Amino acid sequence: MARLSPYHRRLFIFLSVATFFEGYDFMALTQILPNLRADMGLPPEAGGYLVGVINLGTVLAFLLVRQADRWGRKRLLTITIGGYTILTALSGLAPNVYVFAMLQLAARVFLIAEWATSMVIAAEEFPPERRGMVIGVIQGASSLGAVTCAGVVPFLLETEWGWRSVYFVGVIPLVLLAYARRGLKESDRFTELKAAKGELRGSFFRIWRSPYRRRMLQLAAIWALTYVCTQNGVTFWKEFAVAERGLTDHQVGAAISIAAVAAMPLVFYAGKLLDQVGRKPGAAIIFGLGSLGVFLCYSLEGQWPLTAALVLGIFGASATLPALNAFTTELFPTELRGDAFAWSNNVLGRIGYVISPVAVGFAAGELGSWGPVIQATTIFPILALGLIFWLLPETNGKSLEETSAL
Image (tube, rainbow, N blue to C red):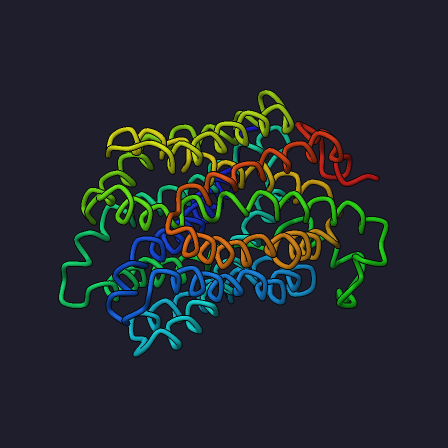
């Protein structure tokens, strides 16, 4: 197995730290949601609408992600880290829910573009036999961000600044990360492509006119189906646990922290699993356990049974990402890799991410319960898994030139 160079190791750490904030931000919103609603006088169903609006940023991130194929991976990563840092600080100063929603929507644009760019760099810069492991560990850093956020939020909520302090604290390491990015180099594959083709320009719909349109649409459907469950299973669990199981803020924080810590070895192993058994068998394990975990998270009673179920729920929400990231970055050529990720994930795939919280929040309001609604979403990752086995080729251990060939 190829050894990682000193630069590869530094890059590995940098991308992992950058992705840490994807998990921190995702968990921050889920943890402060009841407190934010109370502070701003919003009804329970408004939480679903707020999450839906903020998640529009994950779709608009498309406008930035596709620029990776024109501006370069390094430049885009620099822009996204800087933009996210500024918007995170401003979110803590939001005077009302409308300003908060717009700031967080914009923050998600930069955050998701940073995450997607990190995955593209990881796929292009690391050896094929370690690609799954690297993508998995970088995505696992997101779980570490979620653990950190879940652990500190209950204490930050008791400070003078309340939920706002969650965003103020998150800015400090982001500033350090913005400084550390100075040692980052452009990916070799993009450098070679630009040297061969000069200034890279492409039309907005170029992938739609390429032979890769069908593959992009297949991945978009898989992303969308997966998000319907993973996005809502974690986002609304605190609402469910507090309102329907009687847990306190500290109990919920403890449950999420314990479950996230317990899930982390599994999440970090997920990428290696994809390298060891293959992308498809690994996806079967990950998607199956994740769906089971979410179902149990909204079925069981008592703090400890729920915490145990949450281990699998968090594992599923986290580990499905390296599996799909691997397919999405491996199945397209260098000149279309950013475009393909942008269209399949940020535009079409995020339809399930954006619309489902609104639909789930509405349905839960009508039924007066989160449990049955979230339980019903667990069928969607199983459908996504079926499409993976039916439509996608196995990419494990192959070069990007092999995996991107039609």
